[in-house]
Length: 272
Image 1 (spheres, rainbow, N blue to C red):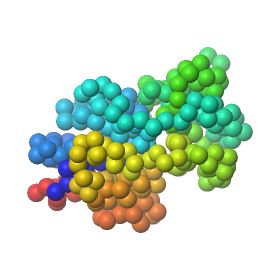
Image 2 (image 1 turned 90 degrees about the vertical axis):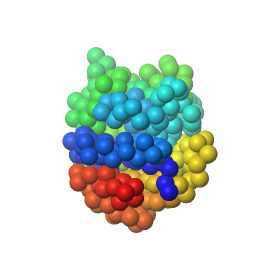
Image 3 (image 1 turned 30 degrees about the vertical axis):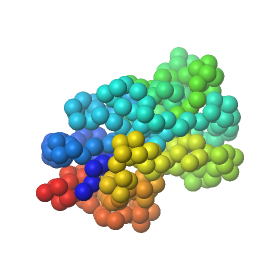
Image 4 (image 1 turned 60 degrees about the horizontal axis):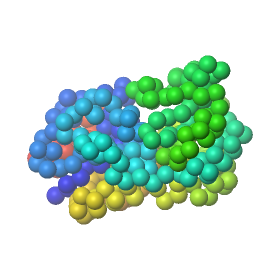
């Protein structure tokens, strides 16, 4: 039986309007009563889980920053973290100035993003940012300068691609310049960057080890390329009907879309 259910959020557990159906909540509650761990697995930081999810009493952990960290909400601490060294992060932010992107960097769960002369978030980011995380965005006229003052490592980068530009070309430029980094995407306008070797799959393995649970007893749900490593690592890989063609190639099972309670329907089938 599966003891860990690792589930991506945007495009997977969350509907397009960023809500979770009561049916899905009820099904998750039912299996946690049986000892199953629900592990939200996201590119978001631990501060950015939707309130409707974070406030559920059975959500104790979250896999965050595309695998850059796993957070324990009960003990209020990271139980796993793998970040980008401060010096390397500064080099990335300098290089980003030559790319058609608005840059953002995550430090200790907080996002520092491109802002205007009043240190407010640029309108473009406010328009395309995932609903529900705007409260966690701190505008900075110069992101590199603001990050340098923190003196900490970066948990990850999220670059917002400017409209009319080729995302794959930008990703290739980043990968070529920084071979020690992993460049992925979770949406048409989002480019996500972690230290090489860090991904959702590695974080899931570390989490299962820390819980003394064999990785074969985990089930993973996803829809996008940044979920592939987690799908490959898990005992059962479930991809949403709305998932990308590349992601579906890594599926053991295709389930209904995020808007059709796909996660809840799989739970119903496997935990009758």
